[in-house]
Image (cartoon, rainbow, N blue to C red; front, side):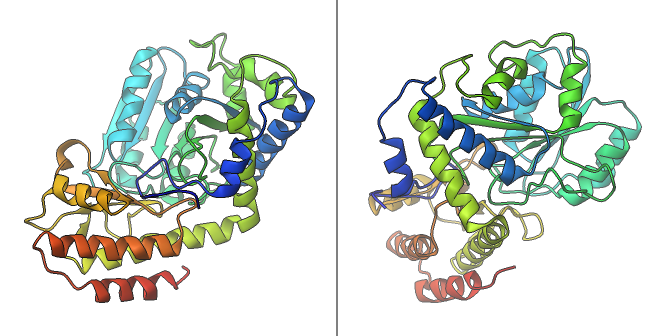
Length: 388
């Protein structure tokens, strides 16, 4: 890789040379047939990854744009939305819904824990909701949602399932053809971004709608959006020579290459790799007296929020790591200064994570907190070889 640092944060994630090369290709007009063919290929690869029978949208924008597109095309002003929140980014749907006059209720878990299915059941029994949002892997806490438990409950009560896959897509199973627990137990909308487990630079909002979600849009007389109205984008997604808004040409080149790498590896192999990376990283860091915020039953495969042992100063620790070429992220909200977040997804390699474990241990020793680096690295090596 050309990267001079190990960027092990919850996103953006490391970019490999073939993606950089694709990004650096000659810029062509956005209606040029040669570019349109690449754009169409990228869209079709996205459909293959998510296994949707509906429409996929790959447009310029952040994950927040993807969240907005998913929401405004399915839930109208005055309708009710239930948000299942496992941290900071689940809560973002509250502000989004409020901005469009949607009535929002929230089930907020204790940070590091999952919202229980019984709470969801109780909430849905007592109120009619148009849709329910689930953050598959919350970037602030490293908690993963239990889709097998939640989706059947939601669908039994007639609500749409909107899955925020920003920190999960291409690393944790998201299959829009799968029956989660019952015949109609399917994901209706998946939203994500380019810069996390897909491993492409930031700048693309990616949203997939199944036929049920498309029907929900058809039943809305209008939506409170222009750029994010999927009806403005469907003609372009079906034939990229057509124009609505200028796409980021070079980023689409990079995304097409990124999607080729995802599919070449194979989805099952990616799921297994990411699960092994997460378990091995967390196990190794416990040797240093660190504690993952989420237990293994709740932990995401893509990132971990790690609590410091007493006596480690957050700024000194992360600054020292950065000086060694390892970038990790600080924690958010009430955990700021008490924890750090480490990403282990996308193009991140086993060797990068092994090096990170070693550098973290060396840094703790230098800061006056003696730890056994050799033991931690050995545990990482043993655990990462296990494919769950």
